[in-house]
Amino acid sequence: GNRVTANRTDAAGGGINCDTCTLNSNTVSGNSAQATRDVYGGGINLYSGTGSFANNVITGNVATPTNYAYGAGVRFANASGAFSGNRITGNRVGSGTARGAGLYYAASAALTTISHNTVASNTASVTTQPGGVYVDGGTPVLSTGNNFYNNTRYNLYNATASNLNTASVYW
Image (cartoon, rainbow, N blue to C red; front, side):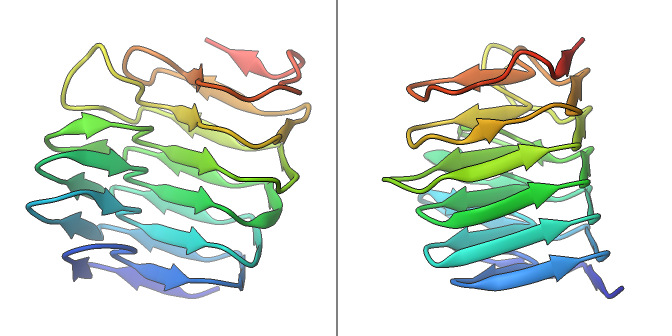
């Protein structure tokens, strides 16, 4: 796989910014999205289209906005596809309001399967905000085999979605 490391943006996708992409067995680490407004995906920003993310390591990415941070590790928004076998660890929102330091998921009508991922040790700047996964609309299928643990405040925060399978492990 590839390594995408130590990049910076002032808006979206510090490491990777794409509308339709397939990412398999890559390492995305140490990237940042920093701005005096909202930021989207410190490591990866997928906005619209189709995405397939499998067996990636997404770690140590930072989102530092003045307002809202939508996924310091990954933002998966208004897209469909599969998200499986990824390790999303050690990402953090440095300031502002966190909408998932590990993974932010939002969709208008897309159906995405989220399975066999580890989302751990992601932190929000304010400990009352979601550090793990933030689900904000759409109908993701949180399938079996996910492990969510040691994230600030919430391992999984479900703002509006349905179909969340409780067979995943929450510590």
